[in-house]
Length: 298
Image 1 (cartoon, rainbow, N blue to C red):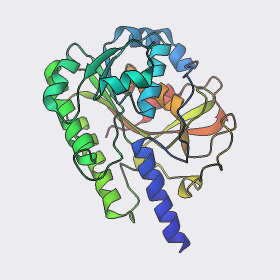
Image 2 (tube, rainbow, N blue to C red):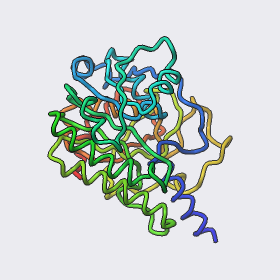
Image 3 (cartoon, rainbow, N blue to C red):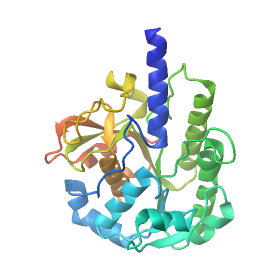
């Protein structure tokens, strides 16, 4: 019975990570402060300010943190949204952005959004497993639409956020979960075989935590083993305080945003696919970018 419960826990946690949330944390992060060695690198900061970037999924928690991280270093990306009024309301009336209306499921709507764009950061995710907004429509076919339109528009690189277990799901997952992960894995393959530069980020459990406090660790998906803590669901109220060391097998949302924006312009990230997680060690002067060249192509 314990083995079954543990398998289900892994399944749920893995699915939550792929869809951008985990561990009972419902609140969004505070304003992202990107004060780390990677983001302070003048070459990276300048590249982010001068590269034409499109962000997809900005109304989600991961996408929202990515927008805050980009704007914190002075970047002004274009933002693809499905519902402009909702997006503006969520961002706040005082926020001025380069909004464009479009939908990954609508190939024609992507043409104008990608005009002049060099790099795309795709943080879109769906929690639906059936219907016209499921993982097949948004992740698999949406990625196909995005890749085709990006190639026509001359886009150079796409950064794609999926999840820890997309590469290798636990074997005893319910069929609908397996299908969802299969759709996301197919999306990764579509991107990797597109001929475009790609970076595929597979975060572990995502938590609201301060930026820049804890050491970021990258890992190759084929060799990554979930931690013991990842094999038990963390109920609301059981997580340590935000300023305490993170549980094993989690990543601060603000630090995931840092990895996403830096790999958008970092040459060493080209055509890499890897796990993004965090240890309980303080960040210090450690630069996670040094791990990039050890990461595999997909």
